[in-house]
Length: 505
View 1: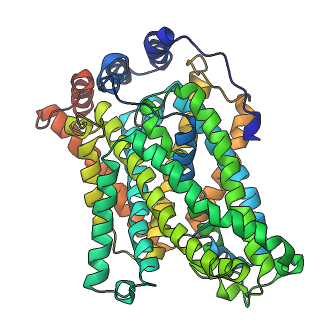
View 2: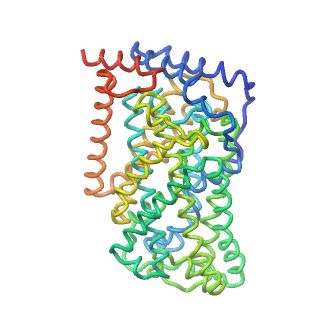
């Protein structure tokens, strides 16, 4: 489906740099309140010549192939972590899930991201979309949900690396000082690698992706003579755990929109984003489906045996010890790739929010040589370490819930902007009328509502507390702007202060 994305005629470079921001401002102002007009005028000035465009001239931008693999690691990173779906519902439902879900969920989210990333080609991504649709409170709240979801998700990867390293060094596998030191050390090291620059992270993602996918390509090819299709119908003992099944699917196949926070760093985003997302949907679907078909169809393991790490055992059964060890090493490589990609998106989200005036200006500071948002990376590293020692299931459930809330607001922003501002310049436009777009968003939205409802009271409580924290943070930022306690982006801070002061009168 995404391979059929239609590309519209692209504007010239001068149009992209000059006319595009003005068309956005005009479209957004026609139906806005005076306070919203002030807010958007400030952002238009910023987008046209503010911090977003002030990067060093030598900094290289992200091109198609690195962006494909950054999206790949944002969303998946390979079939690692999918084992619990087999354990929860059996091989057949798992294969159907990973066949249908990338397209029923990934394609709508990818199309929304492609259109809005081309319409708002600045750093911050979905924060900009919600801000232009519903105002700064919506932008700040969506930014809170998605950012916390990202850093909570990132926190799982050093722990996963420690689990695999624990197979060689057992002391690391058990709770204690050795494990704590390993998790913190891995977090600091991987965060420092992110400081090297987004271009290096992008091409590093290409290398990591090829190396981590290679053992699954071999395993799939070697499994063909051993495949027995009846094994795919193997049943779980007792009742199926649908909550675990859908949580696992969702955790393995979300974050399609995360790369949009780096749109300001992408070469010709109006062309590159739609193409990269189209390729990534197919790559991700295949990277799950084929290895799972091979592992479930070529081994006799019951669903109960499918715990995290079983894919490496299946590779050993199919290809031998060398393939098992390569697959296990691939899990570490994949975790590194996911950490780097998601740390980049989280850091550039903070940078975009600072450029928009939703965060203090120091979050937008860049390293002189690499152009990386070093303050945002440091802040994200600190938050990641703080949540690194939650239980793995708690991490997954909380990250999923916050991401779902943000995605519902994101879909609402997309539909609202299409309905209220159809004249907004969109270099890429989803070729569907509004009723069809509503139907397109309804299917994934229904799934989002379902998985939110079954999340459990503990996840509800944590998400409610973090949401309240986000609303409180927005209030604190308003006070800081009005009282001039912190420095905000000069292009928008004055307009924010006037709007905030008007709301408090």
